[in-house]
Image 1 (cartoon, rainbow, N blue to C red):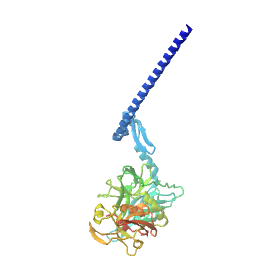
Image 2: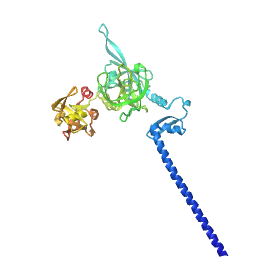
Image 3: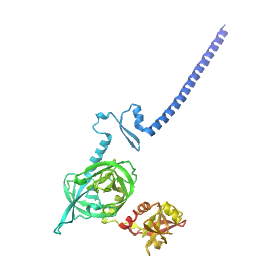
Image 4: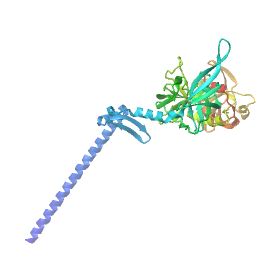
Length: 430
């Protein structure tokens, strides 16, 4: 009897164990199936959201989720969201950003007044005339950066600060080619000069915010806001000089803004406002600034030497075009064609060959058959702007490595540089 009871109990336990295992595996199978289904649904939803973000923006996704977003900024660490009901705000995030830039930088912007003795009245007397411009404080000891055309003809200079104090200024250095100048003021010990923060123009992108602060028409420290609307522009100013690699912006710039800063959203100087393109003499949405990287390279020479000596090759060059490449049957389609070399000059002595076959090319005479410059040092040369930028760090008297393509053969030569002239830069802009 006891034996039968134990047998039945064992069978019962076995049934319970098997039943428990079946339930366990059924639950595992159910959850596994549900997980696969949920994972598939999540992936499908993720793809839908990615498509929505790409086509309609992050704002649409957040709007569907019921999150009120006032503004979105994209940074290196991801997205920054400004939440809340805008009706409760005094200022938008964009406005607050503009205000912060102005509060940070406006004390670094000066108002420059010039006196120029150029006007002549009916009695042939020389009369003084006043002009205005802007400038950027470079250092606490009084060095100020501005445009050359603001100060170059002035017989006297005065600088107005944010605190309404005015000081006489002296010209320290002038660079007509890049339209840059450095002047200097001396202030009392109790007056604190706030230098501007110099950024970089190397990584600018079209569409990013651009802010101008200056003194248009004599209105001190006026701020205008726009975007970077173009890059690497060669621009001929009203004074006839050529500004290479200029920044184009639609931030309003008018007479009196010249020499003032063009800023990014962090309040860093990315350019020096220089000129406008206009048929009326006032801003029409096409304004230009000298890249701050260009200014940084010349400021030390302007302070130390009063001028800038730049190196250049003693030869003339022609921009390659598909038509010219095809007509001349060149073996390369990138680079600059050596038109002529100066007789007895450094380029000729180094072995660079100019053209010998004279042809009419548009309104110009071009000599074909010369070398094609493809690199300066380690810098590839694809066009005239590349050549200009590659030689920018060099001074006259220095030697550079010039790589050329001569009828399909690559050659490299060491060439001593001459001092660059404004005429040579003008020749780059047709």
